Image (cartoon, rainbow, N blue to C red):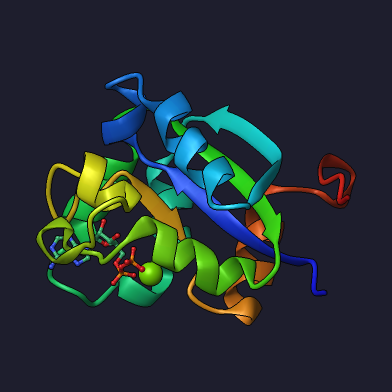
Length: 141
Ligand code: ADP
Ligand code: MG
């Protein structure tokens, strides 16, 4: 039994449509547990730093503008194989390629406004969790 952690972000397209609870419901039905959560407004600087690996990609500026366009919910999810499991629960980056029942298939508006972020490796999950949360904010089971 591993107690892996991953970072999730519910993006502005979802918070603006008031579907945070519906996203969380899919997360919880998958067996993942939301063990930390807060609603914040990202600055351009913070969003740019978070998406640093994409800085040279053509969509970077648009992505940053989108991520600061409204509040986001940052959350820590816990579960067995949480990183890989959440990537599956989220669905493909492009919602047109996402499987039925995934968060992105159900809710995403476009490849950019795709409702959620999830860490893509255990190593990145650790970095991304500490980017947003202090140890005292995370209460593991
Ligand atoms: P994922 O979020 O599935 O890990 P990436 O890490 O490749 O996807 O991209 C980060 C985010 O950048 C995506 O979730 C999406 O919001 C945005 N994005 C990715 N590819 C594109 C694209 N071709 N055009 C516009 N936005 C994109
Ligand atoms: Mg990614």
